[in-house]
Image (cartoon, rainbow, N blue to C red; front, side, top):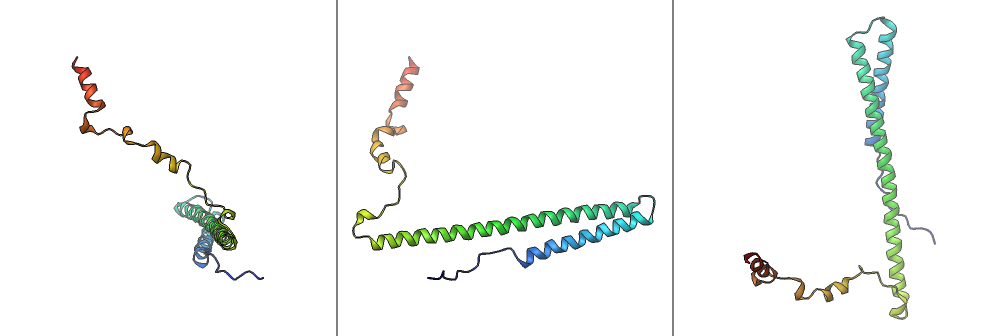
Length: 145
């Protein structure tokens, strides 16, 4: 039987790619401008500093945006795999419960350890009201002596 077609998970797409490409174009323009200024003049001027600052900044922005896009893509793929796994697990549990002839063949979901034990241990003796004069009254009488 063929796999049913599932909707594609969210993938960072055109918008993220646009900003990465835009940062790359600006970085390339600043680097070219810096190269042209360096080849034309022999001394460093304020334009050299501006071109170098722009080149470094836009390069770093492009790298950060590219890394963010890659992380979003891998997170979207992992999320889709987890969702598919959860659907498969729930479907298999549903099918196992429907095919079972008796309740003993279905494995129940585990509960937190001690869910039933905590209620049995906690009787009224564990809690003492401040107004009852329990241990606090004895402590105060010891201090007076």
